[in-house]
Image (cartoon, rainbow, N blue to C red):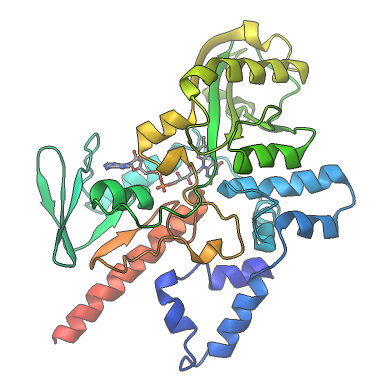
Amino acid sequence: AKYEISKRTFLATSLNNLPKILSPSNGRFFKNLLDLLKISSLKTLDKHNKSYFRSPKLRQLFNRYATYNGSSPYKIPATFALIPYVEFGFGAWYPIGGIYEIPRSLEKLARELGVSILTKTEVKKIVVDGSRAIAVETPDKTLKAHYIVSNADGVETYRRLLSINNRFVNREPSCSGFVLMIGARKRFPTLAHHNIFFSKDYGAEFEQIFDKLLPPDNPTIYVCATSKTDSTQAPDGCENLFIMVNAPYLTEKVNWSHYKKPYRDLIIGKLEKAGLDGLEKSIEFEATITPEDFAQNTYSNKGSIYGISSNGILSAFLRIPNKSREIDNLYFVGGAAHPGGGIPLVLLSARMVSEMIVENSLGIQRHGH
Ligand SMILES: Cc1cc2nc3c(=O)[nH]c(=O)nc-3n(C[C@H](O)[C@H](O)[C@H](O)COP(=O)(O)OP(=O)(O)OC[C@H]3O[C@@H](n4cnc5c(N)ncnc54)[C@H](O)[C@@H]3O)c2cc1C
């Protein structure tokens, strides 16, 4: 029920519409308020799971869904119990060719619709005239626009592109990640497509990530072997492994260039002990991505990989609104904006913004007639 209600409310409309939706003059005011109360929760996901499962292992499994948007099960509201509902109810799907096929398909569709895309082009500034965003500046040109949609991290858009340093900086970033990508010269028969090697003490792990802001010394490890489903992903007899652990967002507490190698060794050692015999020796290729790399390569706020965290009862309402409140014609999509991080929600933010822009331009035209 929480999913169905969220789908027609929180996941379908921008926060900018909240005052309208909850205005007593709205004919659906009581229904909307009731919906909101039904999906809100004062309980954490962990407490919710405790009330359903006696087995500590099942609790841990269902607590893991908090990490799907970079948060802690001990802090996010039970509303997010809708994530396992989506996974179990609709199934887990694999795009043939890998997850990168999703952006490739979007690119193809956009080009077919006449969109021109400039790659390897950094936006340096959003030009504002009075209270209106009117153009973006790249290193070699200024592109004028009626509407500007920022898909860069929202906090960083304010800081880097608008030189406004105090907007949304007090929102807690989501966690970051530490990733190993390995090409192995052998196959690991015990692995499935998706594998999770859980830590013994989940509470301690999340305390390290979100309170102490340190990489957990006994991390839960996710291993994805897409070649189990899609044989084109690795040569015969070989396996491609995407290995990821949750890591804290960047602070001065961790120097990743020093910690990268020991942490990589800890993870490989743990996986060997967990049954991936001969993993280290089988490595033909490997690459590591640290939180510092995420921050440098994508300009994400403190290396966060899901935008703003959902830790805290009100966090859902504290995200960056899809339409800027202070700059006309400036819109936000992506993990730091409403409704949140993770590819499905990020795509929903794009849908909300395109609907808002269409409504807005139709409104302007109607007004003009
Ligand atoms: C290792 C990892 C695993 C993940 N696993 C999953 C998963 O299994 N399922 C899931 O749903 N989500 C997953 N996520 C999260 C998901 O990838 C993100 O939530 C989503 O990609 C965020 O989309 P976005 O558009 O906000 O940001 P991004 O995908 O980061 O896109 C923003 C883009 O803007 C570019 N950019 C920034 N600033 C500028 C500028 N000034 N000029 C030009 N370009 C700029 C960046 O380089 C970047 O390419 C994962 C993330 C990571 C890192």
